[in-house]
Length: 335
Image (cartoon, rainbow, N blue to C red; front, side, top):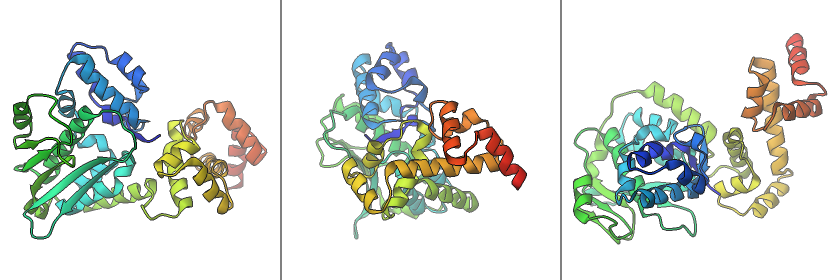
């Protein structure tokens, strides 16, 4: 299973309701908790996103459902990735930053820019890197529409696609697409994306270098580099996904695009296991928080992915031979 931030469905309940349908049964059928919709700290299954968007179009009868939903979303749905892009000094660095850290929004998707020598145009391509997907035309239209809105925000007034390309046939009258995108739209194409003038990449953006550097540092801490060693990548994903309460070996393996048994074998070859890495991280974070912060124990338990505070208490007795409260008093007295 692969995940995406809950902001990917920002505006969904409101749009479905405005079009005369009830969003709650659609979300339940898609396996998406209502509380996760629009929440930047929540993650939902990527296939659940597909199901919600496609069923939203069917339930409301809106052939342009994906494009309508895009009008309710912007760069804010990307969280820190969007902020890093907005504070980059140049258009090229802004777009490179988004591509480099897109996995913090969802590892299920890839966005690339192809710049061919001698061509006056650059090509943006959107891909879903999951196998055996159900029909997802509305999701592609949503994703590409949001991408164009984000590019327009980053590159500033005057940005416009030269052409838009979808791999599926038109699901609405073709004239509506041209009116929406304000450029030629082509269907049954070999890629999903858009072309734009290469000269757009030469734009310099308002300088927010200090903010950009801080956000980049944060992104590095939560996103494993593509060439990161296995243990580094697994530890990074544990830190990022544990607070969601849904951390499993299968989920981490899916994020790394390897089979769970293969991940188990590779970790064993490194002299450890997934369970040991999770336990080590929980112990380190518990020790740090009890020593250096006044965070309530219930909140700490949730941050560590425990369902109840009592589970944290049992773990503390196993790690430290004392309850969390007793251990907090002890380490502070020793400081």
